[in-house]
Image (tube, rainbow over all chains, first blue to last red; front, side, top):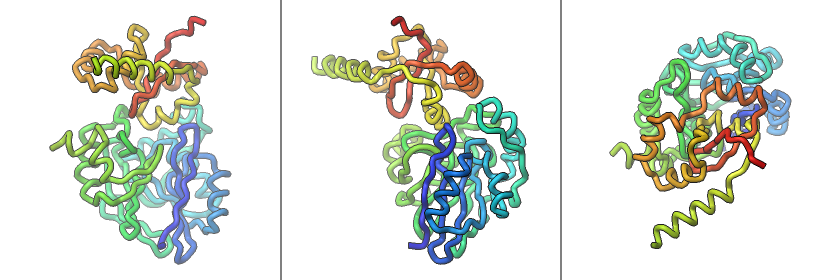
Length: 216
Length: 104
């Protein structure tokens, strides 16, 4: 095994924050820390991992609202999402207030990501795919060796992400799923932002929004 | 006849699964884009039955009449602020919700 993953559902939205640990080095990344910092750090401790970075799929509050506090607390950088989500991160205080989340300040990631980038975690490498639609700057991380993807709110088991947000785009989302993610392979297991894991192959068969049957 | 029996069974199943639930407990489904708001003019159970039967024509009609809609952020914020309790039933992948006041 090259990586070990623990999922911690956080916030009232039960967003799947992941701790991704490189089993070779013991280094870890926290993926999408939307809140509940104490529970996230307890999971890190239980894994016996040393956090070296925070990585973000997109700029919605349930995925990133605890990022800046964790960055300061752990002295680690934030990588991602794509800069298309800058406006979402800038609006964090406003959206947190509206949705009764603990207030989070806007922040600047240490590194914006683009398609084709790679992100390292210890000795592991994640590939970065730009998947707009849910948000314009949404990215997906893929660990090719272990065939695992962190897809944020692009696709869920049996459904897809909302597109009724500012700069959301249904056609772009379908294109991201059908033409960027599905070609990566049916065997890839994905960890969505909400709910249980699935595989791209299973969703191609049964997801009513993006199944092959619907698109021929 | 068998088809009618199946529909009646589905209706009974959905009825048994329908309950009042606080929006705070539904936020996870809202975040995943799975909440659908059903107008008080419609029978929540009937909507679930039609959804389970993939009755696209009926759904298009309800959508055009604005009797069905996704739940947006403003609506969610209002329900949260008012600590609203909603009628809800799962018609996978959707969770149908209705604001209808409880008669009891």
